[in-house]
Length: 417
Image (cartoon, rainbow, N blue to C red):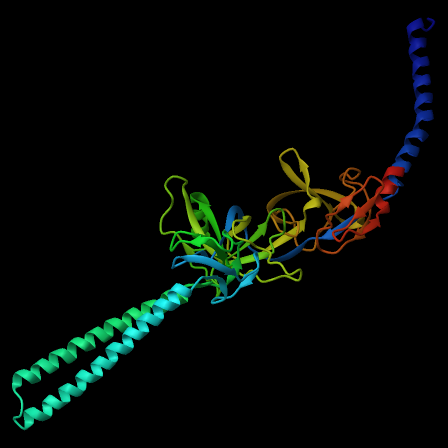
């Protein structure tokens, strides 16, 4: 019988060693799997997708303008005598702003009135003479020629009296113009000339009055947006208010509304836009100031769709994976599923419209997103169905919208782990 070869013995020994190693490693793998399955749930806030009726908007740039604005100039020449307003104050139509030296105009008016009185007396004399001539002609005591002459003289004096009355009326108007009043309600600017200076009729700017409530909001709509708007809203009733736009001042919220009352009949060929005008109320606020002044640059939300019902989630729940938008959805057993979604416009309360990929009632994770991945289990903390956007400091302190702070230990737990 032949002895086993050296290579056969070596092969058998390697099998024994390999089997022993596998037996030793097996408990370690099972222990790792058990540790993975027993890993603690990750704490995270979750929020239920909600629905509400919304309108899609395009954000445009606009500007405010006064409904009325008047440059106050004198309508007669004279020396400025008094200034009767406080710059920057609100004045009402008819309030006195300035007075000019009116002595010359008073004297002229008195002279014209005296002339009127003289011509009226002369007319009365000629009326009496005409009546006497009529009585004489009935008795054949005067000629027809004398009667006609009396009639002509009476008519001439009547015309002169009318001319004198017109001159007196003009003198009265000039005297009235020496007292300069505001023609509109509005805020008055500062005086442009001081007392004692000569004011020239129709040439000297005295001040400016600007109407502030209501106020116009102008904005330009580009051709593409305009055509889309007309297609989407064809046949849609806008209600009693007509077309309403929202707008914001600076970086503020879109908490102002304006009713569109006019649009140009044709596009501007140079810019390819159509100008719209809307009217917004501008009442005095609690601080005694009006929120809008003419000349402001504003951001306008121009509606591009009829009202419809949409699903919304907070903007902070959206995860960007290259060009794909995703959310982490909570499933049975508090497990996480990654869901691809198609987003719509961002609303002014920081809630994002979800076009596709999410249903009403599904819950999404809104924070601690760096530690979460599909297939892990979380410890969900329910939030209200609104955006939780706030400033988060490195120590886990949240600074809320009203300036108060709160501690969020989810982030502290994450750091400790």
